[in-house]
Length: 261
Image 1 (cartoon, rainbow, N blue to C red):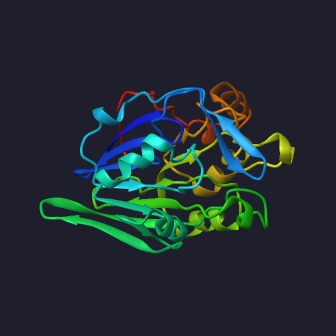
Image 2 (image 1 turned 120 degrees about the vertical axis):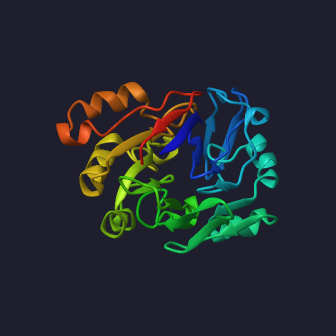
């Protein structure tokens, strides 16, 4: 069992096995426009449903990447030193310093403490755009979380990624019970139809490979460069096979949901 609170965008609070983990901290108020480089930018359109002062003490931050404000904004960055550890990409850890530790794909970090179950956190491959885009968009990671009392299998956080061989490898190597999928179908006018995160059809294709018990969409609202909001996702899901469609569930924004993982 895990208690998951969707705070907004990609940001969630995961409470499991006695640990508290925060994903991709974004807590700035709406209205500001942020540059992502190479002629791309986005405006934040919604603020967080939970304020940083309302968070419990954090054992870890799982940061898929540090260099885009829709995954780590100014207020979120100020929160990082308060966590026990920040797990991210090796390049991100070098930029952040302090309590940040970088994990290459398939490397594992263990959260261990007397009286609490150990959580194994394994970095998983992610690619934030089309082939050969990594020099432009930078490094990204996903995370797979495992602990003894899981009923259905690994809790996997996809990170900002498109469907590619690295993500297909996740389906081959892991028994994913619950998937937090970063959707949004991100694109920018300067690069036309190119997508930088999963579209709903690609997410459906991925879930046909993963066969998770539960799929929880995040990273689909709150920013102007997210091109597939909840309504668009639901429209596409209606076309999906029933055995895939029925695995998708929406997290209430701002309120915790008990999830059997």
